[in-house]
Structures are given as C-alpha cells and as structure tokens.
Image (cartoon, rainbow, N blue to C red; front, side, top):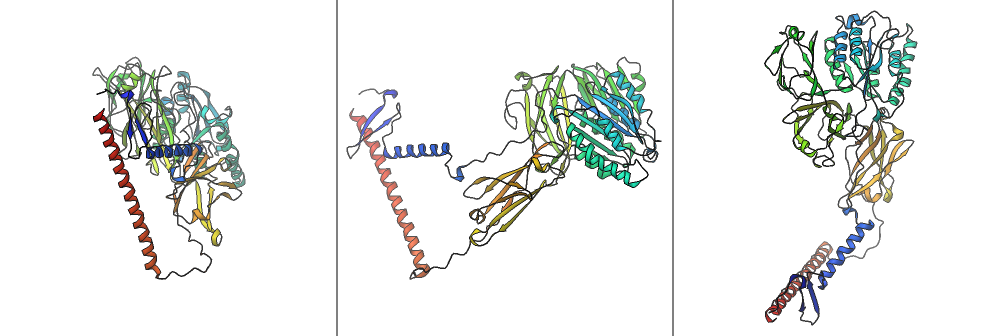
Length: 633
C-alpha cells in the first residue's frame, strides 16, 4: 500500500457520472461545483466591499474623533501656569467682609502656588493699584505677596471692574489656547460702579462684555469670578466665567473665601499631591518639599504633625526645626517642610475633605487639564503620564509596578472606581507609550462632579484631583416637522445653535439616520440664514427611523466641542393613497389569495428539502468512493 504524505495528498475521486473532481490540501484546488460557487460568492462580496457597493445594512458608520480635553499634547511638558489676582477694596467690603478674611484667603493662595508658576496682584476700587507685577513665584515674590495681603483695606470709592480686568490682561500676547495656562481670579462684592450717573455704569458694564471678554477669549485666559455678596452683578460675573471656561463662585460668608481660593488654586496652578487616608499619608525619598494644608474647627485643639520617627510637632516646635515653616491663620494651618523624612506621616486634627498634602518632587504624575464645564452627553479625551526630572517615563517595568485607580462621580457621593493602565485597552490608545488615555463623559449627571486618580507603588503614592460641572443645557434645539403634500410629503429637520455658548460660524452638524433593516446612513445638515436644515426623502419619512445628530465646533470660550443631541425617533408618515385603477376581480376573495400564497410557500419548501437531500446523498457517495479507493490502492 502506497504511503501518502500530506503535501502530496491530491487523490482523484471518480463520480458516478464519470466526471472528476479533486480534493487538495497543498494547492487548495476546489473542483466541487458547490465549492466553486461559494468561492465566487466570497470573491464578489469582497469586491463589492472594496468598491463600496455593499448594501446599507453592511455599512459601518465611522463617527469623527472627539476633541481632547485640552489641545495640549499628552506626554509633553505643560505650559507654565500664570495666575493674576484682583481684589476688591471698595468701601462696601466693610459690610461684606468685616473681619477682612480676604487677607488670609490671599495668603493661602500665595503659599500654595508652585515655584514654576507666575503670579501678579492688583487691588481695585475707583482705580487700580498694582501690588506685584507679574513675575515668577520666587521666595522673594512670595514674601512680597504675603506682605501685600496685610495691606488689604475697604476704603476705596466705586468699583471699577473694567479697569481691573484691563490691567490683569495687559502684557499677554494673543496665543492659541493650547499654548497657555492663563488665569485671572476676580473677587468683588458689587457691580460696575464708576460714576454717580447710571448711564455711565451701564456703558462701562457693556464695554466689559463687548471688549474685555472677547480679548480674554483671544488671549486664552480663564476668568474665575467670586461674588462676595448677594448685591453683586451675578449675571456679569457668570458671563465672564462661562465665556472663558472659568469658574463662578458665590458666597455671602467671607469665611468660605479660603476654601474657594483653594479650589481656584487647584484650577489654576495645581501641585502634585499625596493621597490622605484618615489624615495619614506616605512620603517617598523623591520629595524635596511637603506642604500641608489643615483646616481647623473653631475652638479646636492646636494642630500637630506626627513624623515617621515618632515626634509630634506643633507650631511652637516647628519654629525650632530647620526647614519647617508654620503659618497659623484664622481657620487653617499651612505647614511647609523642606526635605521631609521618608515614611508614614499623620495630621493630628479633625478630618476635613479639604485638607491637602502637596509636594515638590522630581517624580511627577501629570495630567491634561479638564474643562471646568462639560455639557451633558459630551465626551472628552483625557490623559495622564509620569515624568522624572521632566522626562516622560515609558519604562514597562516602572508602569507594571504602579497601580492606577480612577474614581469619578457626583461630588459628595460614593465614586465609581476602576483600574487603568498603559496597556492599549480599556480606553488607553497605545500600549507602552507612557501615556494613559481615558475617555470621560459616559454616565455623568448634571451638577458638580469629582475625578480622582490615585497612583500606588511600593515606594511612592501620588494623587490627581479634578472637579468640574456638568451643564444640562442643550447646545442646539432640533425641530422635526412633516412638510409637502401627497407623494412628496417628507420630514424637514431644522436645528438652531445656542449662539450664547457656541460659535455658530464654526459649527457643523452631522449625524446618522437609522432605518432598520436598511441600516445607518450618514447625513449632514446644511447651514443657512435661518439655521441648519436637512430634508429626508419621502421614502425615508415613511419608515420607522431614528435620527442621531452631533454638533461639532467651538464654544464661545474657544474650547473644541463635540456634543450629541438626544436621539430623535421618527414616526412613519402615512403613504400617499394610490390612484384608483381598474383591477381584475379575483374570485374567492381573501380565501383564494391565502390559498395561493400557502401553496407557493409549500412548493418552495418541498423543492428546498429535495435539493438538500440530493446534496447530502451525493456527498456521502463521494466519501464512500474515496474510502473504497483507499482500500484497493
């Protein structure tokens, strides 16, 4: 019996009709007619797919990519943060801030600013006084700023908000928003008040909206506004913040200024942080400076810091230790420690969610800034990465040793947690590039939101904190109405973009029309004087479809946005009545029609069953012939 090798296996199989077919493993020859038919079907489907002729149900709609949370490039050094502070010193502050709590709030901000930042300070009332020209936050600058905080008064007449903003924006050149991190913090308790004549005040107010707000947008500056009174011009302050993706804060209690300044510091010039667990935290050997912010309850016992070597240090003890600086203010303690001892530390004070452990270190966890306001349904791409002495860390062994836990959800509620990694999945784009990407937006609810990213390894910990608001405002209003008559009746879709929030001239609206079973079809709306419009065909309008639209463009503050409108189901329009024609009567009515249809279906079923039976028997015979050939060879 001849031994057959697999590469040589190609045996002739004789058919009952004398025709030959081949089964081949080495050359992949297929001589069976049904096999050839299957191959040709596959070839034609491939050609159709390449040429774009597949039917609509086989189409995959590729939506355009989302804009990033910021246009800065992940993994690259972020621009230097620039923070300029405007403090209202008008006479009305005697009533709204009787204990002059603006001073400790300003000192808190000054103490928290990182050394790589730049800062400037102005007081304003009738006119504007420059206390500190914008400059790097050196130790000399910091001492001058702390001294200036002690000179805050409440005696100036009038409230010249426009002049204050003009002074703060001076010196900045127009720049793309991705190239700068510019922030202006404006604290006031009043409204534009430069004249005893009402017309002059209204004119000055309008000039702020018409001139200074567009200039801030052009410069890429975020205006953060604080209203320290119910009498403040809240509409103006909100418009300035929203128009520049800044933060608007309102409080009638000056005691809240310290926590407000903390939040605005974290928006403007955040520092690396350590996770606090029950007021305990771990310091690693790379930390060159530690800054502790501890909020203190009224009549609480003095704050103490427990060091890894077992010492309990209070304000008096810190004065005797080289490298320690302790600032006790009304409501909080700010403790700065140079070259802190590695190990486990603890704050001996009441727990407070605003307590912080901030550090300077060569090992940093960086992140793209997030917008201060997201719109409900919007998604943004975000990224984090590690650097050591400014260089991106890509080493796989380093990343494998670090656990990254991302938690997010409504502020004040339990956060949803999951782990992320630089592994090219779970939202990450490229494995091993040193950048961990995430897409944010799914499942967010309207209101304040909190995002925490905690990095944990055997030798260090790090924490990133972002808070932002989700605005439920719809950025465009969509209307769908039937128009036309008879066979031409169809749906007309119109959309009006919210010009107070979106740059209409830069907006585009596209989407997907889904009409099962035909499948999704890309559509685009045409811009016109009356807004955006789209006309569906009469055939599409008579189907049960759904329309999903997306607005792409820029907000008035310059931030790119992709906002999906809620999906709109379309109720099929009734078909036009056909013209009356003479049809031959079918005797028997519906019973005859049912009999014809049933008979046709039965005949088709019998034919299909017979064909399948024939093919099955033929295949069995061919296998038997092959086995018989083996036995006789």
